[in-house]
Length: 336
Image (cartoon, rainbow, N blue to C red; front, top):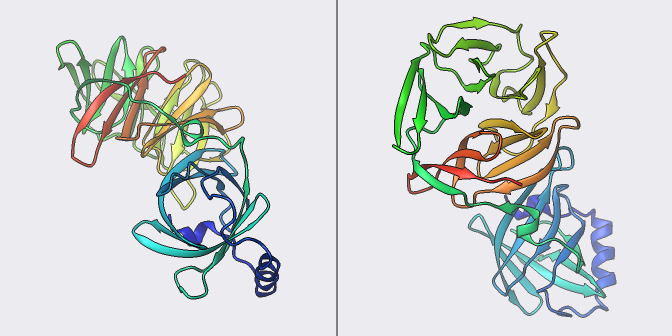
């Protein structure tokens, strides 16, 4: 995320007015090592800048539509009134101006990399980065066989492995059953007797013994990439076709798809349903979504792993994650 995208672009007149009004203020002022709430910014998702420690701070973002949270650690250096930040290996330079509890970060006209301004207000009640996005680690179970969608089937974890649905035994760390599906499916969920699956255009049910599929739904409004079954009459779907990823509901009783809603974060890889909530994984984030409002009410992260699949046994969650070093593992995770 480039810093210029998160800063307020002022008009020429406003920029001149701001600079003139700040000349009487102390350029260095109080310590920047406060928690700050963003009061003006070009980037609508930026809410807070917190935990300045002399070398780094955290940007806390909230999507205004989905209410999903994200956080990013950012390096910085102070030299008098000059503030230099290092984001994505690019340097950006700003002039600090204080006015009471307000901090103005003004574009440094001597450095072409700094294009915009941002205004921050001291906020002692600002959340910490750990409150904004809850970090979870989980219990490592075994190395993963594949990075793919998961579901819980009759007391065992089922994974999609190319054209097969395989059941794992975590005690013996081995595959205990393998069902040939004959087709590469993007997602899988268990309804108590059969598997819900999709190749993108519709929803199908598969016999767990034979692997034979039958088309159940009509054409979906978007290309289905991930699903979650709510245990009764709904299959929640995620589509990644077009520029705006969407979430929508399939009503089993009426055989109809509901309206589409904006999906949070980056591309969602898999979903699960527990306790009236939809859990969706995307990159390093796990979003807990209220399917009545389609808003995120809590955001988690496994900071050391990118997540690919998620399933629940009704109590805990099972997640497959991989890191930059090529390590891929299954974890048992508690999400409160």
